[in-house]
Length: 90
Ligand SMILES: Cc1cc2nc3c(=O)[nH]c(=O)nc-3n(C[C@H](O)[C@H](O)[C@H](O)COP(=O)(O)OP(=O)(O)OC[C@H]3O[C@@H](n4cnc5c(N)ncnc54)[C@H](O)[C@@H]3O)c2cc1C
Image (tube, rainbow, N blue to C red; front, side):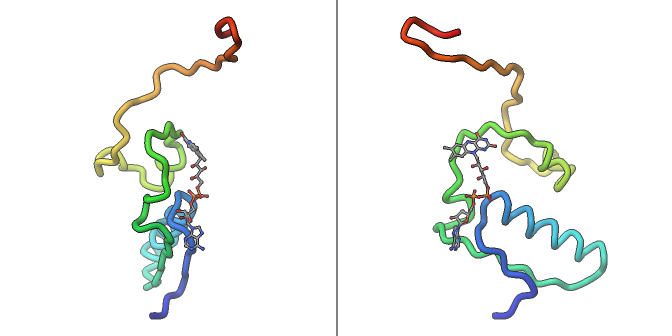
């Protein structure tokens, strides 16, 4: 099979590159075949779960991700940085 662009790796970088390319092609009215090759059993198989992420980049890429039902359920409300010592934390 022939594609215009082949992206190796279906992690955040590869997936966003593929999505952005397709968005740009659609805006320009151009047909662009994009293929993402992932060595995991499925896209996301090598992504760790339970991640805390800054959604800025996702918002730039897909502004309506909330309406589309992206599974980002809990908003971060507090951020603390602790050094753990033998006696406790500081
Ligand atoms: C333990 C840990 C915890 C983390 N926690 C967080 C967090 O909470 N929040 C956060 O924002 N970030 C977190 N990160 C960082 C985050 O995972 C990375 O920044 C992000 O995954 C990088 O995306 P990427 O697309 O560059 O690479 P990756 O996510 O590594 O994607 C690369 C993909 O390419 C595939 N691949 C590799 N070689 C080939 C090949 N030859 N052929 C086909 N496919 C291939 C791999 O299977 C993988 O799916 C964490 C990282 C680690 C290690």
